[in-house]
Length: 81
Length: 81
View 1: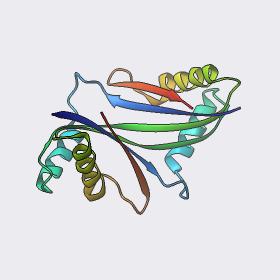
View 2: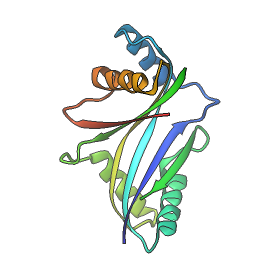
View 3: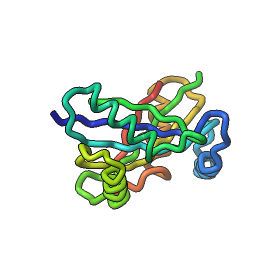
């Protein structure tokens, strides 16, 4: 069966996100001033063949751990559909 | 009230995603061969003050249209919590 795994990879809360800070400044310059924090991460969508949703999640987790996420600086969240 | 808007920005389906293709090749080299498509986008989390969830969504949409997403090449999806 075909599954789609969505992996959200975000910088750890404990770390500064300079890219997010830059975007927050740019939004403020554009007149959007009600935003008090911006964090920027990656969103990766994997289409795959797997026997079950559990197997699809396991494959996505392996991919995230081995290649996609840097767990020193990032955390990841997986959802499978 | 404080709201968190999550904006998922992905390359349009009609367009090639060379970064995704490169990641797919790398995953295959690592032995993860059941994946048949990878697409890579951005995930942006905005913390903001707003009177209601509707207002928060409107602010996030304005931010996405004015700055965050390039609508020639990307589509975006917003969820507010």
